[in-house]
Image 1 (tube, one colour):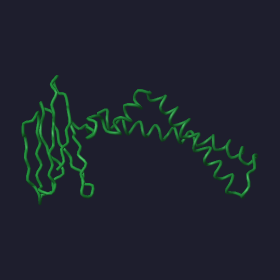
Image 2: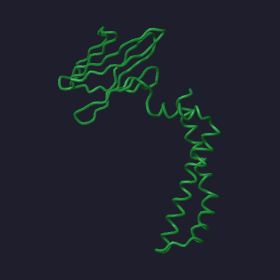
Image 3: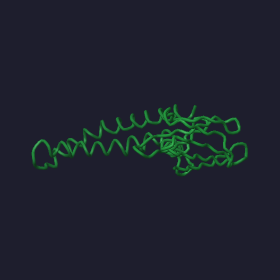
Image 4: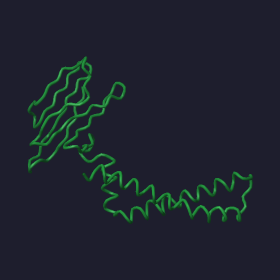
Length: 172
């Protein structure tokens, strides 16, 4: 038997949502503030989502089977609530972090400098050793110069695509 609890706030009221899952009996009970709002017996049906409403907000609980265990996720108005912490999902936390940096700073810092320069050094080291089994500083510097002309721009482009994807997904 698994019990999961979430706490959400709607219209200045806090609601305690609780899921009681008995997977071997096929019984799922959903409670809001210790009041049963739904009880499902679907041992043979195998539904993975259970919908309900809280103060006009569309909610559903998603069951994710993992072998004999389950992960449980509460989604409120399209936003996932992390089942362990009652907080945002990892993608939403990443978007919140990225958004505080700002679009231009994120593309410059994360894309151009961090990703691009790392890839340039990795590419340079990889090819300077793989051409022959010895290290030549002039070959290294030559490859590094050309790598630094291309890889950072690719990193900035990838960071721009990541920004755009998160913007479409979370800023509707």
